[in-house]
Length: 514
View 1 (tube, rainbow, N blue to C red):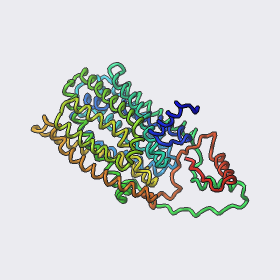
View 2: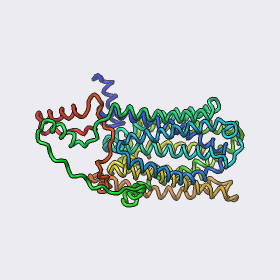
View 3: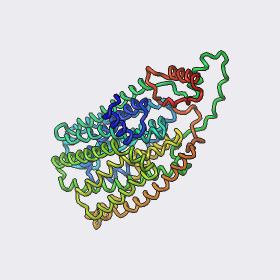
View 4: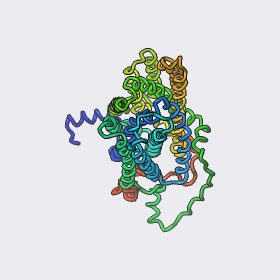
């Protein structure tokens, strides 16, 4: 960039918003942003449609039960995921296997929804119509599993400073895909819901292709920094050092992640702060959909109008999320610190539940829920991801899967249990926003207390430099991740350049290749 007054002002603005982002990190950050953009874009397309499919095929009143059953489904999904994590060292392979499976699943669902009697043309709800249940569980599990896998992969590759500067940027560009997916959902009448499900399946295939490109441009041998530098020296050294003794293998199980959550109080608090807010969002979201569905009716045209409303909801959520994460996330985190940032969302949950209780109209619920969800994606969740930075890779991959998938599904099931209890009581059914928001207010207070404690603990651990769960780390060589070096500037050339630089300045520190 030329050194002009305008360029200097632009640099000052970028530094104000994002801090000091290292130029060598930008290609990887932008590629990761594109990958998350594709994942979330496909998810939001399908997520905007899944309630319409459920309402048309099964009946919207069964949504709370669907969320409860999804907890059981999630247990099976996470058990399979944990098995893959344990057996597959090359972590990008997880994207290929999971993305490929969901590609087939959503294409099959799209075909079923186009059927005359099985699909959307039959507008008579019946709980025995399995396609509605299958669609709901597939979309719910895909969103949780793929996003959790992405962040586990990313958190294992960056440090705290890079996270503070770049996570807002990653989320901002990812929201562009979410806006696009939501915009596609608004075209349900013209493109048909069945075809949109096929497009969702194609987005899963695109994720696999992008991961392959990411590997091609950024892959290098899975060695630690010390071993990388040593390997360059050993090429010119005739004496071979004896290899270190093999580590003692410890038996792994399907419930390793759950064991880590229960064993470490820091990780247990991570579970609480990452899931309690889901109860609040589930109740508010259901209240909004019940009021909206009642306004538009249950016929075919009403289903299309309801899908359009949900598409508009998605556009609002992701537009606000995009603007906030692009402009404000990095600035807020660096100005307030992680500790204070964690308190913002619980306070907003308290305010939203009070507003929904006092003014339970469709547009009050629409705006309150949309803003909460927008700040979930652009402020709360990126801040929560930073809490994983001082943890071991086992916690990042195994415990995080239990927290983000099983924990989140369980929290949503608890929110659905509140909705189901109110809906099942004839005396309370007509006042769902009032009675449903009493327990969510209590949950919001609990979330505030957990966030207060978690912020203190994060600062303490970060200052001490300790790694939570390091003593439980997998002793079999760790995880093979994709590193940051472009292929035309691989580890061999970079390590030789570092060794040469030592001859010039012995005091110069070796930079982290990531």
